[in-house]
Amino acid sequence: MIQVRLFAALRERAGQELLELALPDGVSTVAQLVVWLENSDETLARAFAATPCRMVAVNEVLASDESDIEDGDVIALFPPVTGG
Image (cartoon, rainbow, N blue to C red; front, side, top):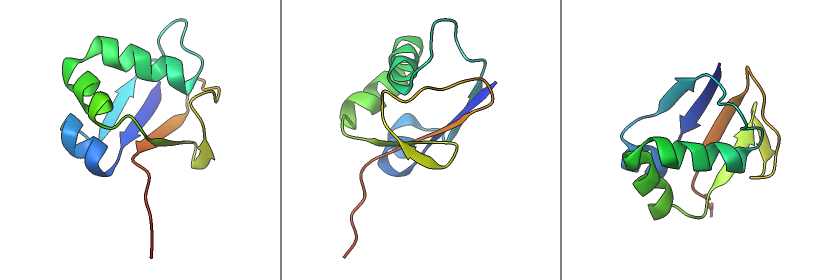
């Protein structure tokens, strides 16, 4: 099982904060996971399309779309944030 946590505008657009699912066969990177999620759920596809620029963390460590994922991971997806 993996957890996918959505934050900020991405969470609002998706209408959910947490997805718990079995790691799909053939999915081993964040990018592959996002594509799989887009193909699995129309609402998530629209949320990702509306938030094309996003940041990612795997197990609370900043990562990238190319980062590897495995069973038991927690993947966080969120829009870029700024401070001031």
